[in-house]
Image (cartoon, rainbow, N blue to C red; front, side, top):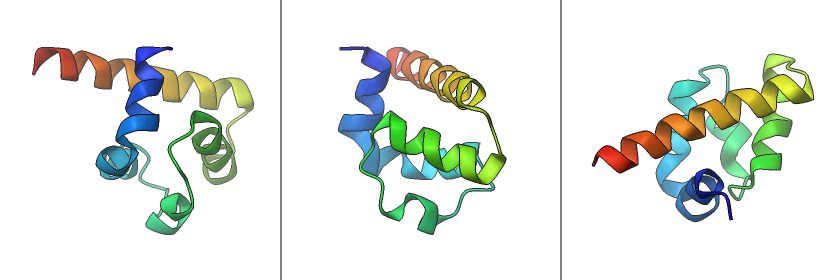
Length: 74
């Protein structure tokens, strides 16, 4: 399993606030029905930001890598 995906799936409740800070156009309502699957976040980012699929994937993966680095420092 990709360790960065682990952040979303296993720590979703803890990272929701970080997601809202990272992507300020998202609302709590946008995230309310999500369970932490990357595909769900891709869908929401595409809707709110009008990203293409590739751009949304790249944004999420970049953010997840940054999160993983921060966790490794702690």
